[in-house]
Each structure stands twice: as C-alpha cells, then as structure tokens.
Image (cartoon, rainbow, N blue to C red):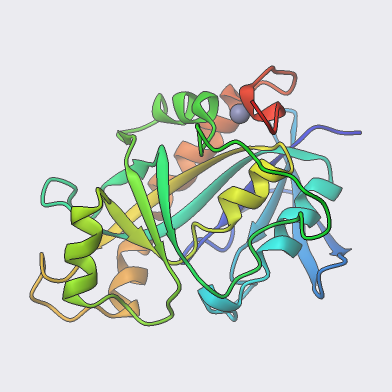
Length: 251
Ligand SMILES: [Zn+2]
C-alpha cells in the first residue's frame, strides 16, 4: 500500500497543482457518494487532492458527505491530511488574513453523519483532537498562529451576535462550518489530520459589516498563493514513514 498525503481544499482552494501532472480518479464509497480526486507527486511523495465542496463549489457545508471524502482518501492509502478551512475570528487579536492551526474544537453541528462506528462500540480518544506532529511541521513553514479552539456550526447561515458571544464565553477562537465531523472521521480512521484555517473576517459583533460569501472568497483569493506554498513546503517536510499518537485510536 502506498502511503499517500491527502490535501482537502476548502472554500476558495480548488486546486494546488498548477502545471503538475495529474491523474484523476473516482472512488466509489459505501456512504452514498463517489468521490473525485486528483493524484500527483510532490518531492517524490504521492499526494491526493480533494476539493471539499466538489469542483465548482457545488455542495454547501451541511450537505458535504464527509464520510465519503475521508473513506475515499483512506482507500487510496492516505494516512496524513492537511485540510484548509475558511473561518471567522472570534477574537480581536486574531485579525482577518491570519492563518490558524487549531489544537481543539467545539462541535455545534447537528445533522451530519459524524462517525464510521454506527454498528460497533468504539469510543475514540480525543485528548489530542488534531495531530500535534503535523501541526509542528506546518507551523514551521509560514506565519501561523499555532493553537486555537475551532467552533464548528451547522450552517449554512452565518452566526447571530448572541451565538458569537456564547462561542467567545466557551473559549472559541475561530468559527467555521466545515471543520467537523471531518477531523473526527479522520481520527477514527487513525489518520494524522491537521486543519489550516484561513481567517477571512471578524465575526459579528467584532465587525459591524454584514458578512457575505464574496468577502470570504476575496480573502481566500488574497491568501491562496501563500497557503499553497505552506502546503507544498509542509509536504516536503512530512516523512512518509513515521510514528504518531494518531495511529492509536484509543489511548
Ligand atoms: Zn498524527
């Protein structure tokens, strides 16, 4: 089995492979969806890219088949994942255009398929919700805020002012709609998973302005080149043979 590296591109990141040789693949899954992926090589490593919202940004956050996506990556031999997420800031000191590598999350999603274990009793340890080893590697490749609590909402609407205040009281640093259950499913499959969050805006009421998806995508366009560089440099630093706590589902 090839040990591949997986990249999940969020809003505004639909490819990282300009000018590279690609092999396109479709993986059928038992979760109701087939998944289209691109395979390519970086620094002699096998990499798989998947646009989370499908090409053309067709699928809204609450309708993404997260199980199919993670299953397809695992099927292709992926065991380390860098995923990008567009998020809003809950803190004055985390300005729009910051990049954050979260080290914890709070899950407010409610109608998504959140586990691979519906038919057996498996309680996955979440003392370390994201891979510490990958976070260390990525953090050395750019100006990134290392650590932070990612609050994930169901969407697709944006948050109210009262919800944002609640998230702040609970200790949230950034808020988005796509971080979960992806991180959970990857860990259930014993994959190393790190989220690279792009802060596109201040959340209400830190900002008086109305938030629009255009604003989110504009910031992604500004940050895209930097993000791709961080990802490609991190891939170069990621060993293919490694030992990690993520390889044990229960501690
Ligand atoms: Zn790991």
